[in-house]
Image 1: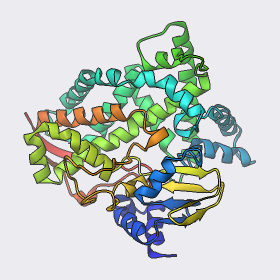
Image 2: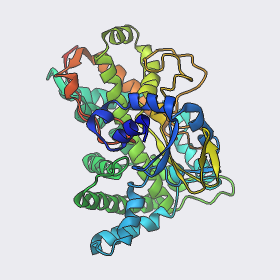
Image 3: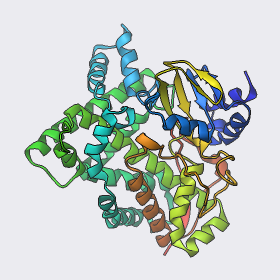
Length: 428
């Protein structure tokens, strides 16, 4: 085993030091062993930008059916059904998941079905609709700041970064305000196994309880929208029709809502937190952005690149191929390390640094590329920009409340985020 494999293995093993800063492992792997087999994740790790871009350009050769990996909900359901000791309740929940998961959608869907689904869903995510939400998002952000502005201190993740995207996506799909905490719990449980191989049996049971509750709630909501449409995204999904395309089925809608739930909560929460962390630990950057709040937009792009909330995705080879000079047999699983590609020095000048107004010829891969470019990218960018601008407009002297070394990151190699970010400030 090479040094590069060993250090990347620490990331997959969720060693806190490696999860906090995996970038040395990424850099060494790109230089020494850019495509290698990992026993721990049972996949070929692909670490260089151009190699990953090559995979993303060829969805017919590299299927997205395994995008979230072997410890996400569907693979866990299959494992539970194979185990004769699985309790009856959990077995029934797993069977339900397997039945619904037959409707592969968006993130896990390949052409031509993926093309059909994107056509039907795109109307709900038009630039006009997203841009029209700016004032609503600003109102949510201001309301969250109002709750802690008089305190002089805040734990940003729980008091702001979670609430902003959660409220927006919950409102978008018609979840009542008194259910927002439940909505967040469902999101946490759906992502619990993604990028984490160490779930206990109790954690798996909690995950499937949430899955069942989510399906029960939204199955009822889908039928309610059929009878009485509202001005929300769920009604748009139920009513979606384009030409001769088949309408979305209930199980397709449920699977899409799961993806909106995760993408609309977890990733944007981590993005907002990472942006603020970068500001409070870099006085020169903070001063520059405070002087010109329009710089928040390029800052969002740079933090997406260097602190990618989604650190990577899995793919499955549908035929024999070669990537980076390494033979990839048909059926092999690939781990595409977006977090590494986005710091690839062959693509980005001063790749480890935040550079506002970057003019590199290649875009970052934080939202993927091609067929599976993130449907909610525009909304995430808008939420992050408005959220950070609101904090800077309302709060002065923002600083870490405690030591940088005390910060803990999510125990996850797929999703990158700070678990808690305590801050002090002076309210304006």
